[in-house]
Image 1 (cartoon, rainbow, N blue to C red):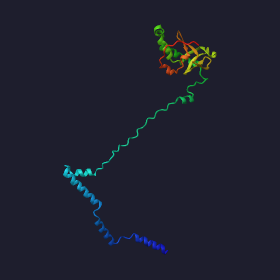
Image 2 (cartoon, rainbow, N blue to C red; image 1 turned 90 degrees about the horizontal axis):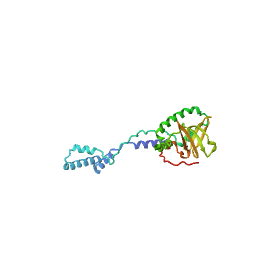
Image 3 (tube, rainbow, N blue to C red; image 1 turned 180 degrees about the vertical axis):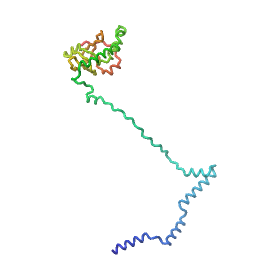
Length: 238
């Protein structure tokens, strides 16, 4: 108990005010050391003002305002606001389309009668596109061949006349899907058959004209074939 009382007394002694003699000595020492920072600053300002006034025709008030200003060494540019980025719609890649099976048709469920109106539309399209009355003349045959090569064959009633594979010969149907290497046709018995273009010869009719297609010359995607320039080549017999 005695120790605790002694510690409390010592703490009370620390926070007692300084005696008068110590205060006087401290004030005397401060006077001996010289003026404070505030007084020196004021002296520097007055010296600068008197030095500048003698050499420049500037009003003292303007000088004081200039001294009060802050001059940054580096000019900071204002931060740009984040503009809203346009979100583009996601487009399926070719690999994703293959995985989803968008390039494949179901082997069952497609009816030949349901595709008949598509064939009628295709016949009208070909009659307007080929302009057979004018392009069938000898002078315009090159133009006719190019149009046949660039035409869209979805809806064409096609028949396989020659092929290296005997099982394809005589197959006849409406084209429901064309790829780079195949024609997919729906036959009269509602069966979907995939006919390779290579090593096959096809025939189709438009009004009173009959045309022959060499599949080996058609191994191009339909979209690429429409924009491609074709040169006249001799036919290759199988």
